[in-house]
Amino acid sequence: MLQSNVQFSLMLLALPLAHVIAQDEDATTKCTEACGCKRRLAARLHLYTAQFETAVQKKARNELASAKYALAAHTGNLALREPLITIIVAATAMNSRCQAELAAEFKPTLEALEAGAQTIGIYVGINALTKVGCSFKTAPEASDYLPIVQLTRKDVGTTSKLEGAEQPDCVPEKASSMVTEDTEALLVTMKLHSKVTAKCQATGSNTCFNAQMGSSGNTRINLAYETTKPEISTNCDAGTHSANHVLSTNEIDLKKRQFQRHQ
Image (cartoon, rainbow, N blue to C red; front, side):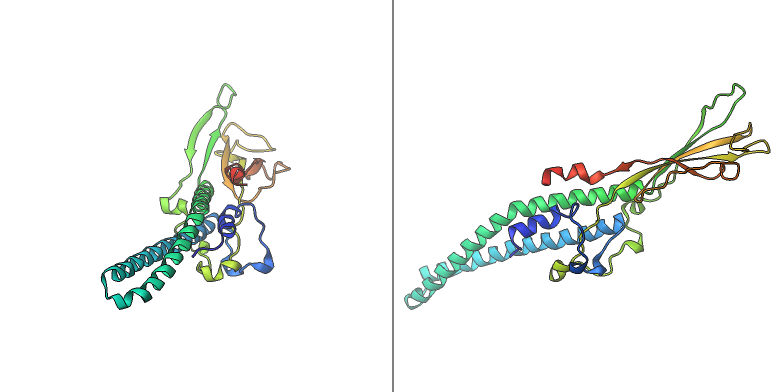
């Protein structure tokens, strides 16, 4: 049968908020990247689902066996009825307990699987957002204003790349197992950080100089998302204005609102 109601229901629901306890975890099961956590959680959900399905199948087989004993007692040799009745009573009691345990486990199991699926979706989103971005450039014209000249999109690659399916560094070192569940490292809580950068880009001789932009230069502004907080640039002078400078960053906690109702 499944683990206790409390342990099983909290196993996944507590993941986004729990802190990893070093002495209780297995270092070979840790994940630090969104795609790795997504794949590890998916493997664990598969284990829990398979365990529940196995319990249901065993209950069905036990009930079928009990029905066969009852039929044999009803139609079989009279000398067999008394020992069969003893078996039938014991089997009925066992089936009743199994039914009660399955009924008690159903709701927390469903809630845990739902929370796990939502977490997987969040990890997929985090991985995808760190693979995409956008940029635009502004350039001076005769009227001295700076229009948006070009809007571009960064190549997002293939669907499998966005889902983290082709990144070997995201593969956990040890496969998930119910035997080692007590030492399974908890999933990490990841937060996204927006990153707005800008730089002056040269297109001719009269371009970026002395922290200014000449008539043949342009300013490129980029937006991207990272899982680590970028540092805001504190200087922009004649020697560095043509490099990317971080102008703004904001933290985006994708899990906080999603899991408030589970607390």
